[in-house]
Amino acid sequence: MRAVDRKGVFVPDSLQAEGAGPRELKRAQAHQNNDAPQKKAFPYAAYKGSDVKLALETLFHGKCAYCETRYSTSAPVDIEHYRPKGAVAEAPLHGGYWWIAMDWENLLPSCIDCNRRRDQVLVDVSASLEELAASATPAKSAAGKKDSFPLADERLRVLAQSTNFSDEGALLLDPCRDDPAECLTYNFDPVRPLGLMVPAGDDRSMLRGAVSIQVYGLNRLRLVQDRTEVLRRLEFLASLVADISKSIADLEEAQSRLKGLAAATVASRLRLLRDRTISEMKSMASNEAPYASMAKRWLETFKKRIAGD
Image 1 (tube, one colour):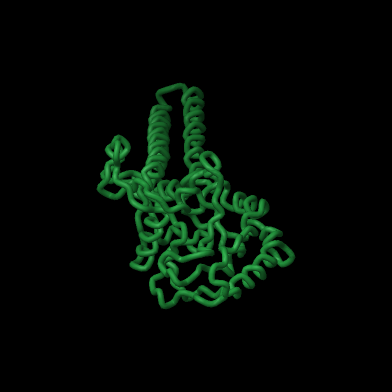
Image 2 (cartoon, helix red, strand yellow):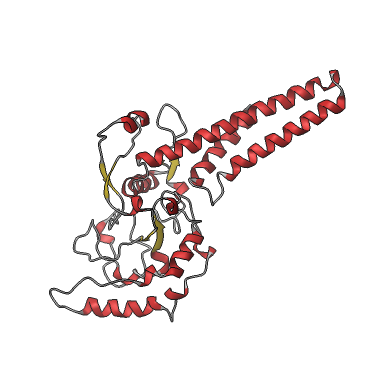
C-alpha cells in the first residue's frame, strides 16, 4: 500500500454539485427517513459511474488501493467504500455511513480479494511458502474488508449525518489520507517469508498496520508469492550491478597495463549496462508498477548496502 494524493485527478462530474451523486444523496436521505418496517435496501448507483471508475483507475494506475496488484488482469475492479455504506461489522446497530456512499473522498479501487470477505490462505512469520503452496488442504482464515471498519474506541464512532471524522480513530489505513509507510513495512530477511508485510512504527502505527494487514488480507498466499518474485528479481538485478561495478573497477585498475582506448571503451560499455540495470530496478518502484511501495523500501536498503561496501 502506498500514499496517493487525490488531487492527482479531478473529482468526477457525476459526483459534483449538478451530478448524480447529490441527487442520490437526497433520495437516500428520504429512504432513511422512511420508517416502513420492511423497506428494501437503498439501491446506491452513483458511485458506479464510468467517470468514477476512470478517475480511480487513473489515480491508482490501474492497481488495487490496498495490495497494489493490477486488478484488470484477473477481475473487474470493485469500487470500495472506505467507510462502509450499508452496515458496519463491528457495530451491528450503526447502519453504515450511507450519507457518504456517493462521496468521492470515500471511494477507492479494490481487487475482489481485498474487498470481499471470504476464507483465504494467509501467511505468517513462521510459514513456509513452499509447504503452503504444496498443501492440498492449507488452513484458511476469513479475510477481506466487506463492511468492516474497526475503531480504537467504539464510543467515538460517528452516528449522525456528519462528515467530520477527525476524532473517530479509524484503525484501517486509507492510502489517500494516511501514509502507509508509517505503519507498514516488508520483510527482506530470507529467514522469514520474503515479501511478508509487517506492522511498523510506534504502538499506534503498529496497531493500525496489523489491523489493516488482517482485514484487507495483505498477506494472502498468492500475494506474498507475487511479492517474493519481485524481490527475487530485484536481488538478481542487484547482483548484476555488483558484478558489473567490480568489473569496471578491475578494468580501471588494469588500464595502465592495457591499451588505454580499448580499456576505456569496455569500461564505458559496462557503465552503460550498469546504469541500465539500475534504471530497471528503479522502474519497479515507479507508481505504475505492482508492489511499488515494497520495491521502494527494498531500494532504500540496497542504497545503504552499496554505501556500506
